[in-house]
Image 1 (cartoon, rainbow, N blue to C red):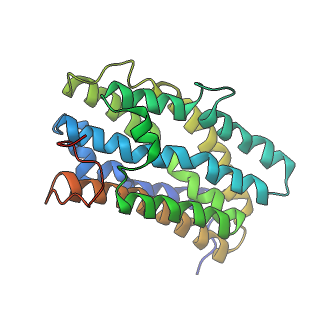
Image 2 (image 1 turned 180 degrees about the horizontal axis):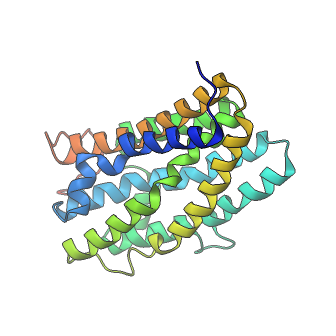
Image 3 (image 1 turned 60 degrees about the vertical axis):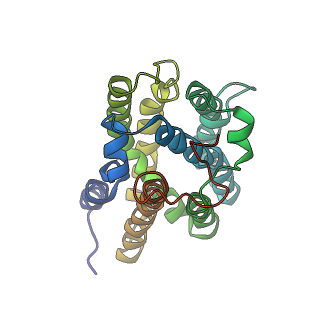
Length: 243
């Protein structure tokens, strides 16, 4: 096991994203290519809501374990980004406006009644990971944000071009995410490059990013299986033909 220079560690992290990030998943290729039905887009928004809603829970648990006040101050911005400073503000509220723009009832979305079981298991596994692993691993798991500006750009362009039922206003959530993600990714990347000082620690950092990529990939797997092929929707999950 070889100790990597900080730039080599960064290159290894970026290589994981190039191979494993969920923008490569067949479901996202359909979604961004304008090839999904409205029901499939709705299913994506319903399930992704749970991920969005749990991000501040995950981040609050990280802050609670962090003894470094400078890191706590930096990480607090993530809570504000998603929860907002007041009702109706923040990323979660904007995501709900997206679901409403797709014709979904807000109470239905927030009730989580339509959630795919695999989505719940994947997101809950991510929250547990951040709560239970080392702080270094928890921070490293957030590094998928290094790759999010590209997927957001593809999503905005592809969905606006491909779906008459998607408006620019509905996609307002994504307007603010690229600079927020870039800021957060820069901090997390610098943190892991500084604090992963042994070869073993570097391997745990790489494994943490692989795990997070697997969480996002598993969510796409669940959507594809339920709504694309073989269209096997679990009992109780969102059904475009019923809701």
